[in-house]
Image 1 (cartoon, helix red, strand yellow):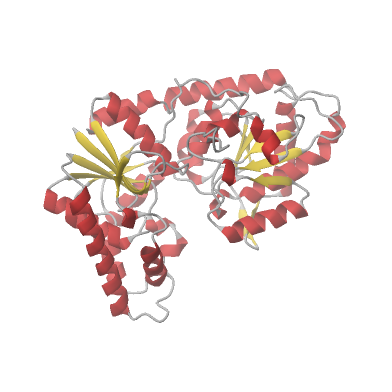
Image 2: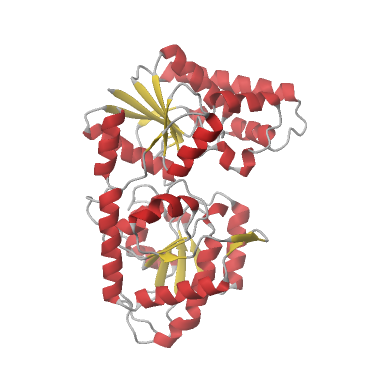
Length: 436
């Protein structure tokens, strides 16, 4: 079967790109012919449709006018611009996309990031009689940005093709399954995010060890990795708060070794390392100020991160960053599933987690052992906060794991086995065989 996997972008470290790569691997093992179709491809091969790009300038203007404020545009002008871009995308699709049995559409039919793309694609697949699976990682009704359409035409698009009712729907958690049923009246299948737990374990080597030198980390510094993108819903300030609390006690253990073999010295620092993509400059600025206020060493280094390490360019993969880390922070308040959670579990690192709704409802049942920030964060002055007693409890539990090699090994091995059981490629293979 010839299958297209379509999104605004592939070949990057965002959750959708990573999950598409996993689907491609699984489907190719089943002998399907699989191609990526996207606005940007990174280092992947595929069919490039530039007008689908996540940062496509024409669409970013339309998106702002459609959901924030018309400004100096009339409703008629907005409609015309949406239609013009849709026609241009449709022409591009016709010229570049040949025959496919199925196209799996990731988020284009659910997020409302590009209304014109959804319109063009809907028209194209119907004309070509291509079967469509909507793989919905996020819905527009979950995002505040899309909550106030500026015209009836925009509302009409959302109602009719976000997503279309006559396609097969796949979601990544039970909350999304309930939500799409309630709001759109359609049934869907859950396909959870997975990870290749049979892969060769990531290891420290002479190349990824250079990360430390490049960002100014000493060998005896304790590294906490925030592997996500830098966006508000990741609530990275909670990681900063926890590290700030942890720093109060670490100096009481000079001369002791942590589980990874590092010795705590007089000059040992706790570092929060952030290699993820900075997608919200104002939020990054807030984090820098918050870290300064809390006296936490936060190092932003996205310029060193690529999907695949490139030794000639001096860049590293996300997996390289996991190998040089001692602890993973994952304080997101909202996730469709949680790719970085599975990555941290595969990397056999202890993890600090905020119990976001999908974790609480779906993932927690698996039995992972994590350090919990609870599930009752409040947003105050643009920053998420949890009760100070929870921060203190987390810091104490982290310290207990850091200083106890046996405990760290028991927890990380237990989590790895649970991940392998419930969230492996084998699980994905079985589900995809049933679908295709």
